[in-house]
Amino acid sequence: MTIESGALYVVATPIGNLEDLSARALRVLREVDCIAAEDTRHTGQLLRHFGISASLLSLHEHNERARLDQIAGLLREGKTVALVSDAGTPLISDPGFPLVRELRRLGLKVIPVPGPSSILAALSVAGLPTDRFVFEGFLPAKSAARRERLQALTREERTLVFLEASHRVAETLADLAAVLGGDRPAVVARELTKRFEEVQGDTLDGLVAWLVNDPMRSKGEFVLLTQGAPPASEVDTPEIRRLLTVLLAELPTSRAVAVAAKLTGLRKKPLYDLALGWADKVGPTSRISASVSDCGLLAPSIRRLPGDKSPRRC
Image (cartoon, rainbow, N blue to C red; front, side, top):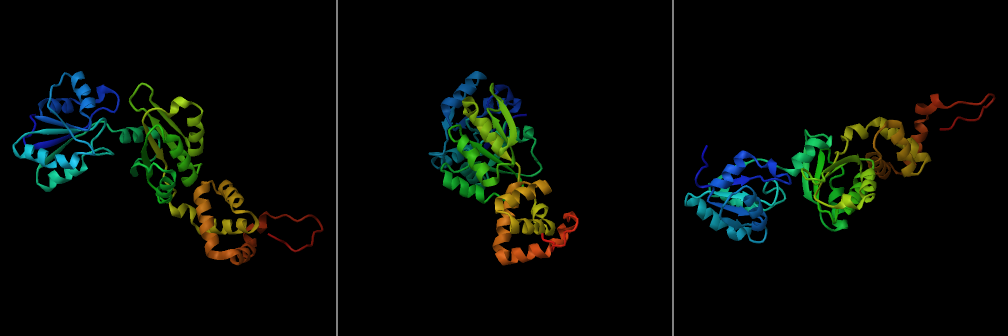
């Protein structure tokens, strides 16, 4: 099958293991007239490894818009161009979006050549739900902005997928634990398809401890995945609200949530969020009166000593 003239081929390249480059990708890279690369030196090494001689054109975040007319002109002349990033699938947290959008607007052909992706590779081995997920890319570099973004995701029920650099991964994991809850299941996928590949699953608190136990674990490229929040219906139910109301009348919020988590098997973070929201709505007076009215729910478990005639209390 020959390549089509006047088309941009978006070609996925290996994220580590060079054997992951597909036969189709090799053929396209050999046959196109020009390869637009995020880093021509990096792509040049890949091409030399496979014995490919091709014309290279730099296309990165600083010059991408300036290249639009040039590449569109090449396609109009019937030339073929391949777009590659340093590793993985172009446009996924890599340059290429403005180019593809403009070419499609102009009615020019854009053809995918699928292949390696660190995101999909991590999802496939993480053991977290994959039927629905959301990719967030790189979180903000500053902790305050990062926590603000994570706060907006606390109720997200889909599996969350992030990319992170080695010099920020420890801080990001700590922020994930602080905002999403340290007991949330999560996975760190490090150096996928490379010699020192690791895929570690635990709670977020457990992963924070795992990472700091060995300085080598902070090196490389990372995909971070966390399980989504439980559906609201699992936590915000009349039964859970009654339980929290009784506990909050007698205990500090953190202790009430801990007891509720043990009794229900639910995670602390969603229970804590519900407890705060519920307490704000009902107010302290309503909480106390509600706990008294719910004595009947707890009465069967309360035992009296022989001869005890004192009023029953919850």
